[in-house]
Image (tube, rainbow, N blue to C red; front, side):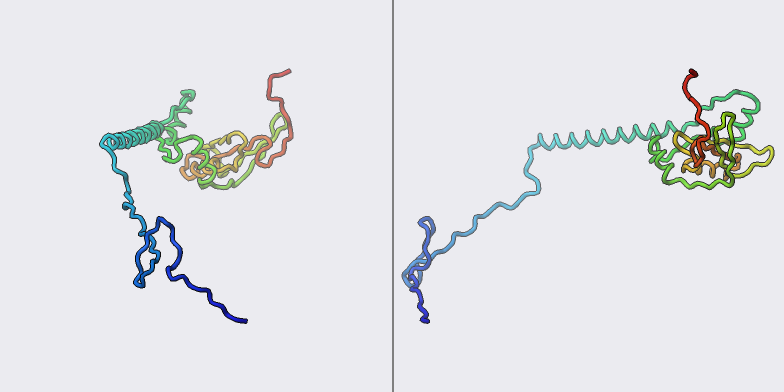
Length: 216
C-alpha cells in the first residue's frame, strides 16, 4: 500500500470575507481570530436613584415596626396570663381553709414562653413533662353496674387531704400531664392525688352502657 500526501495550500485555511487577514512573512495570508469582546466588570448593586433608596429605607423601617408590634403583643398577652387565677367556690369556712392551705391556687402563674398557647401547652404536656407511676389502683363499681378506677400517687392515711384529678376527653390517668400533676402535688406535700379512669378507659371494660341523652 502506498502512502499519498495531499498537497497543502500555501495560503493556509479558508477565511470568511468579514475576517481580517494579515500578510505572512512569506508573502501569503493567514487567518487571525479577532480578540474577545471586552465586558464591563459586574456590579454587586446597580446604581439607584435617591428616590429608590428612600423607598427601600421606608420598607425596612415599616417591616421592623410590624415585627416589633407583633412581639410586643405576644409578650403583653403572656404577661396578662401571669395574673393569679379567679377562684369560684362556696365561701364556707372549710373551703377558705382549703384555699389557704394550697397557696399554689392563688399565686401568680408564669407559663413557659413557648407554651403560652393552650394547644402548645397541651403538646408539651404530652411529650416533655416528667411524671410518676401510681402506687395503687382502686377499682370502683357504680350503682348502674359501670366500672371506673382511681390511680393513687400514695395511699392516704386518715385525715390526709386527697386531690381528685379528672383527665380530659379520651384521656386516662396514664396521660403525661396527669402524671406530671400527680408528681407535683405529691412533692409539694399539698395532698395525695387520685386520678380517675373513666368508663372504658385505662384498660377498664365497659360493664354497663348508660343512656346519656334525655330520658325517653
